[in-house]
Length: 181
Image 1 (cartoon, rainbow, N blue to C red):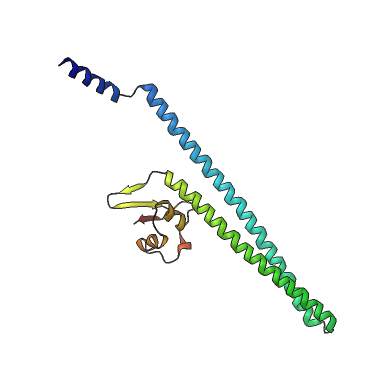
Image 2 (tube, rainbow, N blue to C red):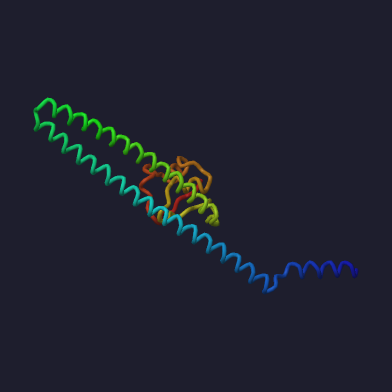
């Protein structure tokens, strides 16, 4: 009887959390929240840098297009064969440069999308899932992409599109509630 009473007393006191333990838990939760906010800030800064790089790349492509158009116009004005050949060679070189820049830009864009999608999926996976009695939902936030949301909930992008009757994955709106299949 005495052993049972001692065992019961031990169980009761071990389940109680002291104010010190509760404060330590609160501090740990606050540190985790601060780390998540810092990670979100880093991602925002990286996205802004990427946007600037994309704008710079687009500016260079437009400048090359302008020069290409100017050369095309010049080719039609000058009829001299030698000048015409030089201009055609220069034009061909500029077209090659433009194609290379566009290929690099597409590659960079895909790399950026992949990197950001992985990071966003990681952040979303850290957040507690919001669920209702009929299934999980996700509210679209600024910067969310359909592929990142799908990766965070470990579902395919196509399944997410079907579950929410989405025909254009680029037409996501902030605040939209998505059903996670």
